Image (cartoon, rainbow over all chains, first blue to last red; front, side):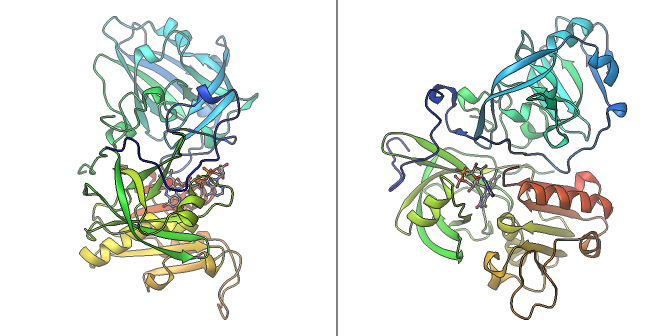
Length: 206
Length: 234
Ligand SMILES: Cc1cc2nc3c(=O)[nH]c(=O)nc-3n(C[C@H](O)[C@H](O)[C@H](O)COP(=O)(O)OP(=O)(O)OC[C@H]3O[C@@H](n4cnc5c(N)ncnc54)[C@H](O)[C@@H]3O)c2cc1C
């Protein structure tokens, strides 16, 4: 229906820098800053009160405190992130512990197919397990060499950079492995259950 | 919690009217080809297409009440360097068309509960205006008040429509004869306006929303009764 529609007098001026065109998913624009979008107030979590738990359909439910988490092997993600509010940040980096590393210790049961991530403050988001493994996701505590700021989810957030950024739950504290998909906060509020930016899966039904 | 109406596909809307709200903000009244129901607080995504196929999308809150059934209104604050807002403010006019989809968002929505405290900074007043307008049209008995923070009188949207239910604060300069010196919202402002057991809707630039959400926590609002929408950048 909208095929062929052209906005009279619009020419666009926020095209991606040369060489980066192929890195912008449909409907996204290039943003050089790092905007903040959160539900409700920003959480304040001290590292001594911080814990991360992996539970649900696993052989061993495991819980880390800040120190034991820091002792895990670390890796870095270099690349792009895409927010459903239309901005993409290209060429950034985060480091932390890959979800593979966490699952190595917890050992998912064969029925586990989905993950519900829960944050301090109660925010939740659901992600298929397949989207969190094989080097595709992290619990990140560092952004561009600095401790992850509180407003960006510090001390640590989930990082699933190949999905829209609301899946990268700020202030994450728990990953629960499930057999059935259980929708999280935004997913119950009109946003897509998977959120692949390259398929422009913004809203329920996209 | 009732479900909010969910988003439908892209459609072309007619711009049936357009008027300035301030020297730097414009309201567009849009007649949808395929109208949908919505709740106050929801927004639309607007998509602009250039002749070479390049597209830009942005979100804009609905300013009008769902009871205003013939069209929806959005109010756009012009950002000097922006891609989309200067187009909507300077180029688009009545008689043009605009591609959009909606209604979007199931969280920052007012479903008729009360009492309600609305706190808006700058163009963050837009979705709050939809709530105020909808209350006036459909639920005048629901207790509701608004705190509105703007830099100067020239930044105040909907000035003629804000009545006793809105308290204004100027952060740079007030109108001539305004008794109060320019200042930011204080804990006392928020505590004075707070309703025990109410909902609070906060919308505006990110820094404003973060500060106000903290003030509401201090005033005793539990986090789950503070609904926030952040428009701006960091
Ligand atoms: C849910 C939602 C609802 C929104 N509702 C409204 C609304 O009702 N009315 C409205 O006017 N806007 C609203 N916005 C903001 C709107 O979507 C655009 O971000 C805004 O119009 C700027 O777009 P642009 O293309 O003009 O600027 P862009 O080209 O996107 O940005 C220009 C530059 O300015 C920066 N920038 C972006 N926003 C601001 C700001 N507020 N102040 C200073 N710098 C900024 C950006 O970081 C960017 O670097 C809403 C945003 C969201 C997420």
